[in-house]
Image 1 (cartoon, rainbow, N blue to C red):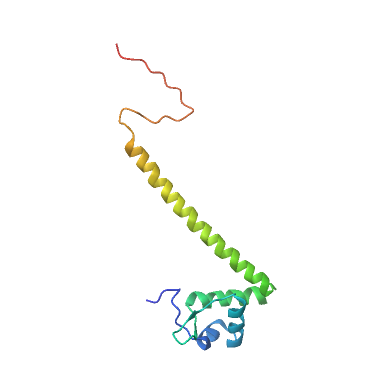
Image 2 (cartoon, one colour; image 1 turned 30 degrees about the horizontal axis):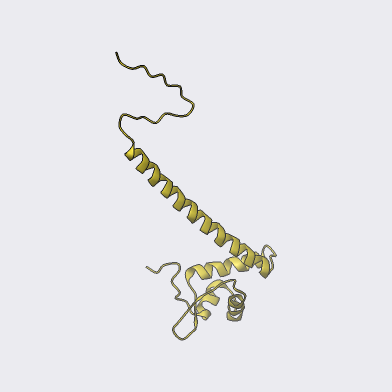
Length: 125
C-alpha cells in the first residue's frame, strides 16, 4: 500500500486528478502553495496528499473566492495547528509518564490527599 505522502504522480497525472492544467500546478509550486517531491532528474512528483491539497486550493479559490495569498496563509495556519496538536499530544503523553513515575515512587505509607480534604491524624496508643 502506498502512503499518502509518497510522491508518485508525475505532473500530468496530478493535474488530471486535481482537475487543473499542469501549468497551474507549476505556478502553485513556485508560489509555495503545494510543494511536490522531486525525482532524481528534478521532475515534480506529487503525492495523494498533494493532490488533495490541490483540490482544496481549487475549492477555496473557486467556491469561496479566496485569493492565492489568502489560500497560502490558510495552508500555513493549518500546518501550524497540526504541529501544535502534535506537540500537545506529546506533552500529554509526557505528563502521563511523569505522573505514573511519581505515583510509583511514592512511599506506601504515604497517601496523596486532595487539597480540599481535611485529615485528622491520631496516633495509636
